[in-house]
Length: 352
Image (tube, rainbow, N blue to C red; front, side, top):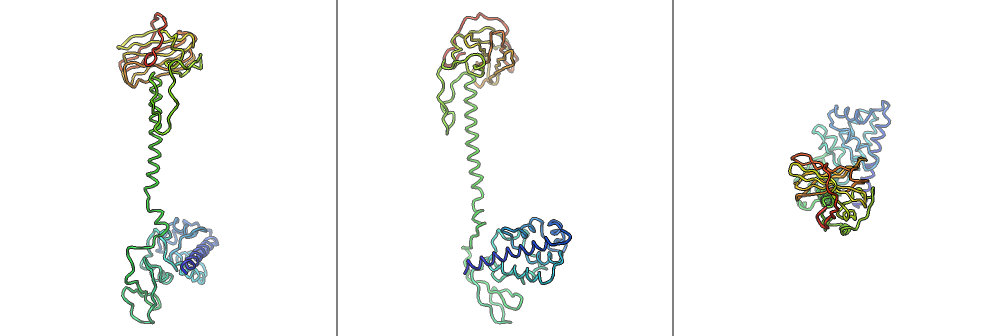
């Protein structure tokens, strides 16, 4: 019986929404929902355009309040029998307890609209009402907890209704754990940030000349670090390659130097690779070393720790087609003084 009653109430609610929508659509003045809501409010029945739209929805409409139905009927000038039909549909739709999702956010009807609301409201439209008792005879005094309704028949409140086991509506279940989605999103965001931070640290270590971290990501391990002198490149293919891990370091030599502010800058060049890079010594965290060729290609590295660092490589046909500089908090230094180009191979783990 409960399922059948719910189906009938749901059908009545949809039929009521269709009727109210027909009132609005058939209005010769083609009034908008916003204007209709304003004119209803001017009659002392508070309603917003958003709530009115929910009453007129074709799918899953909210159950319109009786005072709104009456005021809407007056504003749109509908025949009297249509108001009777609408209030009757409201009573049928209220044959079961109204779920929170279908309740109006604008609160109960005002006291002056209580008679109309009572006329159209079912006797079962009460919180935590689990049983209906037979109404006493006409004119009898209301029982304890009873409330009179039109016609003299009181409504009997349940005397020992359980207060700790209310019926849980689907909307309550959806709102039970509102923080769950936010917590999941925070965990995912934390994983993304941590992975990006570990990747950035490995990029810095590679550009400085240090081996990448063995734990590039706590979740997705990266490829194994290349062993020294395993990368072979030439000209443009050397762009961005760390010389410590390239064959270029084997015949590398310093062709230009620069001193200033306690900093030594070197322009390193490999004839076999036709590539150049910059190295600085006597520097501190935050200092920048940069190599630039005549074509405008440039690579730089910002020092993270220690007292020396080097950049990755750019193409250079000869040492004169590139320039090495260091920018420090004490000033800028460039390698402009020719040096003895005796090959000085880069030591394998930390030199360049």
